[in-house]
Length: 371
Image (cartoon, rainbow, N blue to C red; front, top):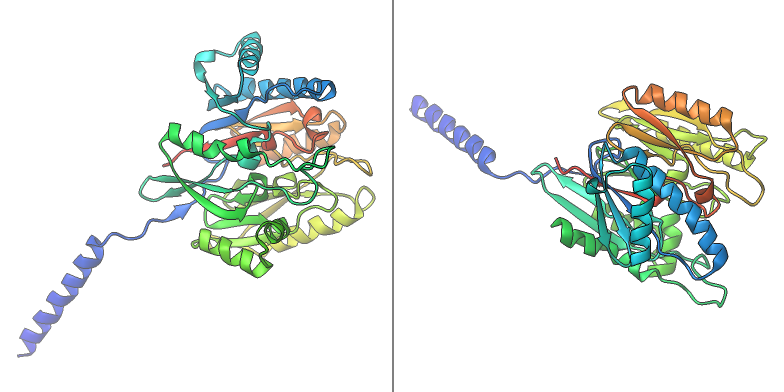
């Protein structure tokens, strides 16, 4: 009788084991790190505005976009959004002048409002089954940021429609999320760690009348498998985006900006606090490594830029140069060369972007590899 019972127990355990093996486990969902393999980099080559002063600035900014493409087109596919014949021809002419093979550039004709691609580019989720999904957040800026001289709010509806248009061409499923989020306000370590700017609480309070707790609950529902760490943005920096002072260079390493007390006491204290906050986090049961880099100097009313606003292009790192801080730029180059020893570090002048409150990361988007 004991032998029969023992045999029955063994058979039952084997059956349970077989069932567990056959039942499909839920996929592991990740947001790939930008330092990981990328399928493409997105650039929005903005059309000419009607105002002459704006046209002059945009022409300089267009040259920066051309610099970005020229430096990384051999290491990653480039998709360039153009919205009219003039912008398409201008981009082609300038790229040919830089000896860029246009056969390696995909031009996508799509209406959009601004060159700030990072704000409205897709955020990609990858599953362990090799599938990808794009998240489409509400692209909205609170306050008077998008109010023109006539007091009319600009909603940038064309920017907000870009994800849906791109997804059709790429064959990617899109999930709309009723939360305000800008691409520069969220960072992934490529694992289960997400950093999100605390500015989302103000944005979603104005847009959806959500309390901070309600906003957190919605983000937790959107990213159920992640540890979400909410981070205070810089004081006096208009975008309130994290990419202005933070960047992951690996799953277990994050670079945090720094200011001296003399240059910017408030943000000196704030960035030190952010560094301490992140140093308490763990990745694979080990403390997250926090590296520091001094930010470029700035005036009282103008944000001076950031050395964390970089672009990863499959072995090429694009580093912004603002033309005002050669010593700081050299220190940034040394740091990234140490953290990314097999990468090519390419400096790109970004002074014409920072005067409009952005830099290299702000004008690019990533389409990560799905596997």
